[in-house]
Image 1 (cartoon, rainbow, N blue to C red):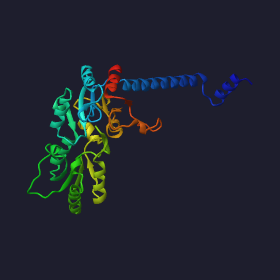
Image 2 (cartoon, rainbow, N blue to C red):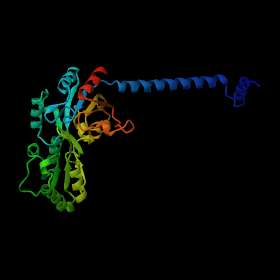
Image 3 (spheres, helix red, strand yellow):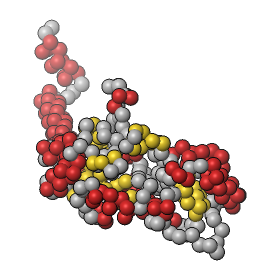
Image 4 (cartoon, rainbow, N blue to C red):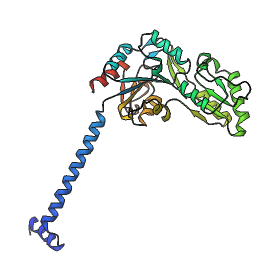
Length: 308
């Protein structure tokens, strides 16, 4: 018996008209093709979503200390001319927003002060909202952006930023005592403006505040509240109304705090090699799974412009 007769016999045995079976089969295939087409179109649309807003890290991305990174000043102008809005999102806590703004203007960048959204300002809002009276491990300049202490109230919390001159036994021990003595009440807070491991300085890689935050946590058992990147709230609160995360990119030099943090909420994360990211420490197998790795900020801008 031939193969064609076998098929006919099967249809007769199970009482299903062959034409009906073929009709449903073809219809099912058509639906599958149509569905696949919709998915492909959706993926293509997302992949080619035009960029409306770029969140840009500062230290290590646009500049290192008082030196712009290669081509960054002109690249920022080109990005604006392409119609992309920008916001500078930074975990910098060594200096106030005013000082940072003046530094960037002095080295050639064109920007407005209100375009800078930093974890220092977000931490100040947190202190006010929670009515804290902290012991500050901050530089004197950064301290000017924070609420003043109330001399009539006891110190009830600790706020930690990048403050190299304050990371000595005397100041760290005072912070420890504040946390240790108040922890029995359950309301004491250890506020980490960010928990960066290290950053790029003009003389090389330098230690960040993260290890000091972790040291205080270890010694007191008080878990820190992290304010800045990669906190999801920090990224979302940086977005203006009417802009969706799919229309934004994050450009920075930290694989985790900048890029992966932004990618967790749906943005693209572009990593540059001018700051703390050290490509020689990675292999092809363990490179950060970011949206793209570029030599400089200027190269990222070129990619954004040529991609749409």
